[in-house]
Image (cartoon, rainbow over all chains, first blue to last red; front, side, top):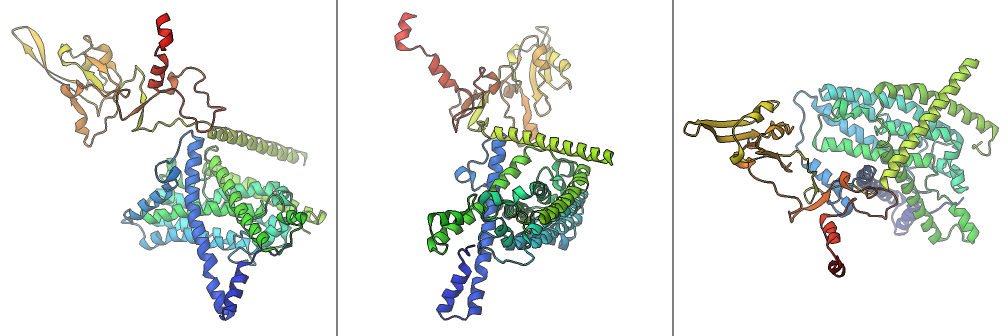
Length: 372
Length: 202
């Protein structure tokens, strides 16, 4: 297995050669990938908003945004500027502190989870030992923020929305974690890097989607519920609850919810592509192609090509999933709250438990195919 | 035990069926993405309304005999007919006539029952105003005719989809970037213009 391009190592070596101590060089490197990731996440909001509006328009035989920038690409910027300049209102009877802290608690864990999203062999902010469970843990913080903002708004719609968000997140977290656990069991590691590594080598045939045909469905349904996307957007169902926990919010506090929901969608799509679609792997194994053409693993230009293909593949897979989510939004009607809880507790939970057991059995029976 | 297995089987079959239906639904929405848009870019493009469109009511002052039939057939007795009896000619003379279009539901009963046809429906639907009392039209305002979309140089008139011949609406197997279904009025006029060579023979 090739090590691929390692920018961190090269950067630190370069600075050490210039006469800096290793510690300083490392400290200088640290902010770089973080800033890059933050910029990437911000750009991904623009892309996702544009995609959502254009795909929604196409599914309804409309044109969508056209006038703000070329093909309406700057529509999200226009929306953002509008939100920035809006008056920031805190309702008279609301709890000011909780009302202000709520949106921040919703957004921060989402951005924090981007720590563990790898775009290549060494292209990840940090390869944590607990890896994927950082994401599972972080996504449990979000409903606290939602409940907080719903409760502090002092509005019955907001409170109901917040309670629904909490109930939904709690009931879908368990099948989500169980389907992740099945993957973890096959890869013998929680690290996202190892999970992708374990899928590599056989191109598209090695991806976890073939080994976890039930797991990926459970994961996708639960991920949609975690992102509060239609058909599971009932915490903010406008026909029943005005806008749920967002009812009393304006200006940039509302903007934070908006940003959080879109980054969360992209994050879920990225995690899905890492867990089930082989992360940065090309449908045909690049290593295999290189060895077929007789090119060495350590050739610099090959490493650059592999790295860029890796980033591209991760993003392409994630955006294909975003496309699917948008298409599902206009296909599937919203479920009722009792149907939602039924689906979570009585269907997804037992099925994901069975899936976990079957995976464990297969792992013992066929250790070659299921990561013994 | 067997009963339990049967239940599991039934449940599984239902789940598969549900998944199948969601797949069918997805294929429908996906198919819509390949169709051309039906958008009318409103202030720049407007629909040519049907001939039976019920828009703002037009009133001809000189035809009115102040019989007040319009008031009686109106669901809420909305038209205000201000008349005075002229003793010399022994006839009613109309002084003012008004309808508040902020309250009117455009049902057209008054137009239907008017014995002298002094009321009629126009194609005007852009009745936005800053004050709802501005919508209380008097006989002068009701006597104005709206601008026709086909004659407005700022507007591209488009035909309503229901008025198109069969097959023109077909959304499938079109080249990419096809425009909204239906020809523009000027294109139809250009087609109907007799060609120079043929004009003499007919």
